[in-house]
Image (cartoon, rainbow, N blue to C red; front, side, top):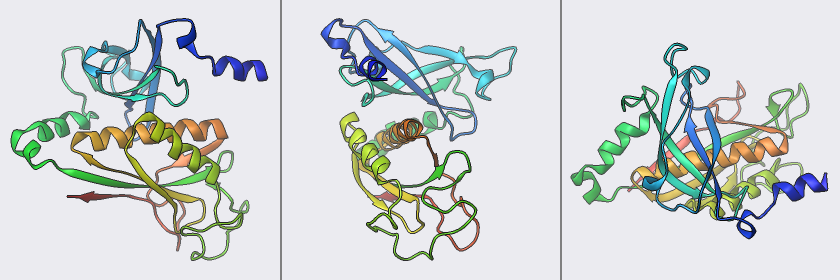
Length: 253
């Protein structure tokens, strides 16, 4: 096991100029995140200098089986907190081979709006408060809740401390630090009203970068929970009844 860990943590920069770029995109549901990695000859800091790539859109509900090629356009780069070194995470949006944005490509229209001179002159600031729920993997029940049962009433969990109030803080803190490492403008975290529910804040960020940073932060959270054997849910109402929902409050200035 230690050998596997050693290999995962290999510092490639000690032996090669090559880097790994993890291309990330939003799948057909509009919420599922997909990614795949490729080797590049050296460090890259400008997304315009990254090559486009392709994937099978019929496997992500974004294209029919008889015309399945979808093209990834790199749009934003973040440092990779998992591979580290000069390796990068790349936020992409998706197009047909003819260059038409897919219906699931919401970034395309947003970029047109934010690049308009009148909008750019306003320098729109956004702060996004992303709430989420951590679930036990095999039962899809919130972390820290008794199986088939419920914890005590809401009240002590919001910004709470202690083993009987804060469930999954190690995941939350790992995500916080990984986002800072990646270059995401994450500004804070806190426990939420429902036990097993947390929030992170991104911003203030300007224009389209707010969206890119939120998606990158969601991706990093998905990867960390994958490693921890926990499911992260962005469902707005994961538990029916008198339990707090989860949203993504948007602040604008």
